[in-house]
Length: 225
Image (cartoon, rainbow, N blue to C red; front, side):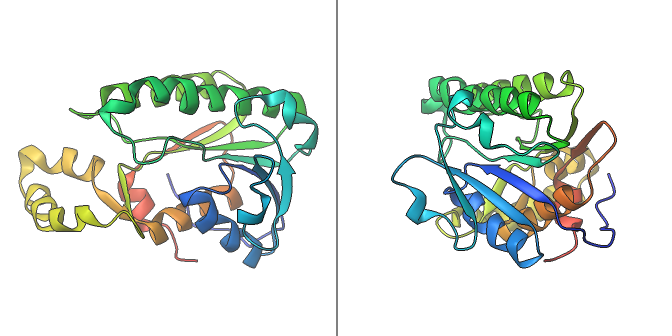
């Protein structure tokens, strides 16, 4: 889908997973572009939120703890997820990733949000089946919600503390050159933290009418912020 931005209009954005890897990168970009950001954090974690955001104390797994703070008509950006996913964390993908998405969706419905932005994962893939299954179920629930939804599907986001896959870049480049492996290499390609942040900002600023899915090539092409 096209993520070219229209003229920026101030939005109210409610972010879950605000103190995490992606939240701490995204929120300053949203604030710099004039958006008002409400950031969900567990009690005692507010000090870890990016400066300028409005702290909302609550449990990402329990919509009742924060749903009254989600403004009607806002954009809800759901970024909660288990850190450093691996096959050993299969149970957590359902108890944290999927459970938090269900809570966010309940809060979004109750508040009458205008748009949900969901950070999912590229699929299908030959590995991380439990992770993909939990995220795919989250996507299904959102697609059935009658709320305008943007789903972003990165595979691995390169950035601080997430740099080891840089050694795979030449291998990815070779796979993208070969017709039999090109589509898979592009679908499961690596993106940088800057590219991911830019794609999230573009999603917030350009809500769809219905459901929009943003894949790796589109994440890479998002205008820089």
